[in-house]
Amino acid sequence: MDDVLYTVKETSKILKVGVHKIYDLIHNGLLIPLKLGSLKIPAKQIEKFITDYTGKDLTDLKNIKTLHL
Image (cartoon, rainbow, N blue to C red; front, side):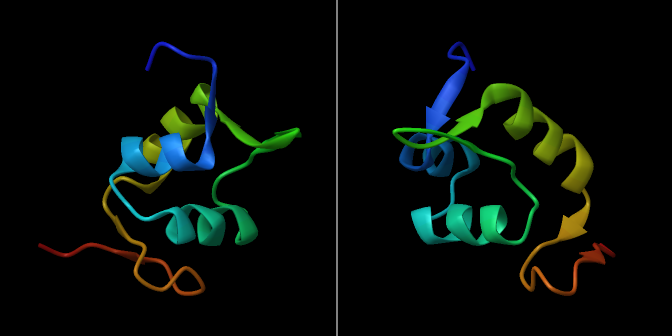
């Protein structure tokens, strides 16, 4: 990640999920954006999200569970 800010679409490509999932993560407070014209996600927020939620099942954002593999 070389840029400081990413659009929702760019973030979806980084996390390999759909754009709607990124909006779900934002609306549930799991990914914190800023609004600069349109929503932008700081690279540090993406890194924090990955660190905080590694090992978690985010299928149901209202009921996040630990993965048991």
